[in-house]
Length: 207
Image 1 (tube, rainbow, N blue to C red):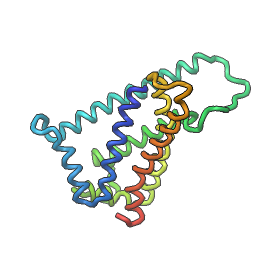
Image 2 (image 1 turned 45 degrees about the horizontal axis):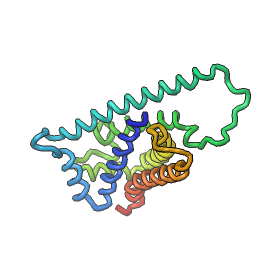
Image 3 (image 1 turned 180 degrees about the vertical axis):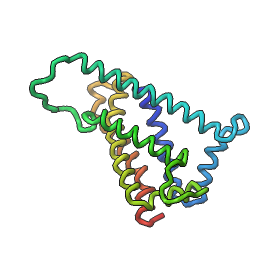
Image 4 (image 1 turned 120 degrees about the vertical axis):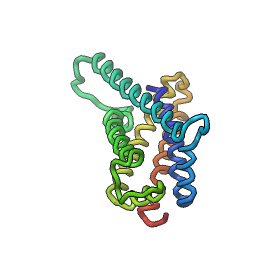
């Protein structure tokens, strides 16, 4: 779970960077989308790099969900009798909502792929330009609302996930924990803000 989580974090940061290209205008964003399709040519066919990346992410997603399922079953099996009274003293909201937040993110990812990758769902109309599709989509208020909720869920998932991954990989100790928690929170905030700037800028007519 920790290793696949790191893979997703790297992808999320790269994806966030790409989305921010929209702030530079249509030419910059469409050029970025085009370069992704031809990256690796002529060693790879057109969109070859994207398909390699997608397959890697799909495998990582399956392993991540499988790991979560196994760990959840182990946790429940370790305590067959429920607590008479349970108080969450030291656990954060992020840690307590990991499972439900993860499920919500999984549903959002499916929706996101159907909208921007396969173009099965078209919000705002059909356009050849990736920039035009992005702008038209986020001019729709309910899509912006879904995106805001999803990014908040992603931020909460990342905050606890980064901290847990560092512990699992053996990079944490009592002395480092406060700094690791602060770094995890900082990365989570960066990702949420970075992903929300383009859609909110479009929604408010700034782009």
